[in-house]
Length: 83
Image 1 (tube, rainbow, N blue to C red):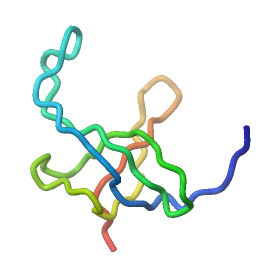
Image 2 (spheres, rainbow, N blue to C red):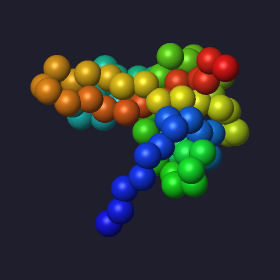
Image 3 (cartoon, helix red, strand yellow):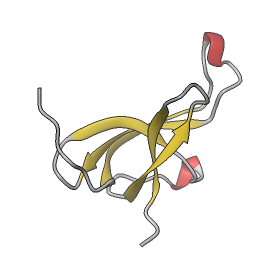
């Protein structure tokens, strides 16, 4: 196992739009689950936020945004890159 510093930037490699949640997530949706390829090479599974689901595209440039869980930690998600 190794670690590395990442820029927080990447591109959408693949994604799916979840329009209706199941079980505890019935009211969730629509939302995007995606693989983002980081500039440094690795791919991470994440959510795409701050973007209408129908505007998400493979190859879209994205940047990391941190969402506080309220439990002393944060989840990484990605939004369209601003620059």
